[in-house]
Length: 264
Image (tube, rainbow, N blue to C red; front, side, top):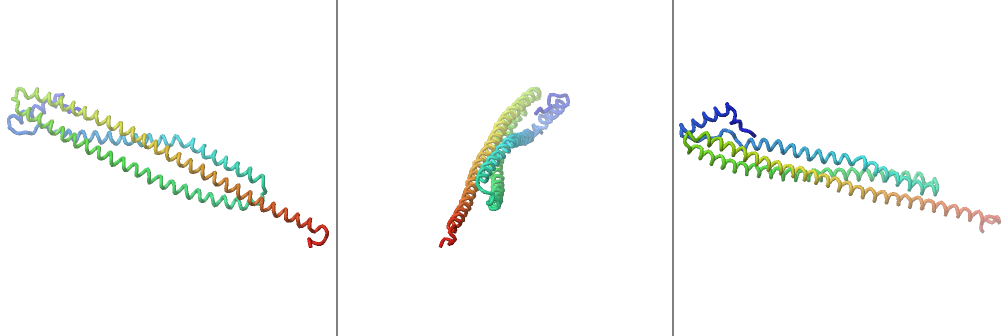
């Protein structure tokens, strides 16, 4: 941030202030609060960095949705094919029981999905709050350092300026302003580099969390589908066996009644 002392108006105001300091014998070197100016600049940059990090992570998550939807639909399609092939090889008499069991399992899947989404939301919120508190603490440390360092620096520069004779005051003023601007620019550069690193780290961590959650959910869905398919196949096979046994018993009864004695 430029202090504007190189303009004509700035030089007039600075010269008047310098004359007052020398002639009055008091000490009031700088009216500009450099620490607050740096804080205002830092707040703007910090908000921008956090927003960029969240937007990058959100865009990354959104970019995964089409592929995940296709993969999920593929899993459903495979499961449906397995169930239908098994059902076609048996009998349609078991359809009512199968449909009833299917609805029960769909309700269980829906309930589990809601539970998982609720837990994921809280987990992400906890991660965000922890990161937010750490960033706030680092910001406070940075401001405390800048306030202490710049206060000492400007105090030393002011003491030297007051001790100079009036003829040397302009040169001392220009030197102090130059050094202060350099210190501010250096501090801004360091803070900006720190913000850039933290933005990249936030985006990286959020992306990793998204990948982890997707992989975990994928494994759960695949395991669930495998269990459901196996359960349906077992139900169908059991029903078919039951009907087969009944048919064989009926045939045996017919054979036993051939001689008209009803098997007695």
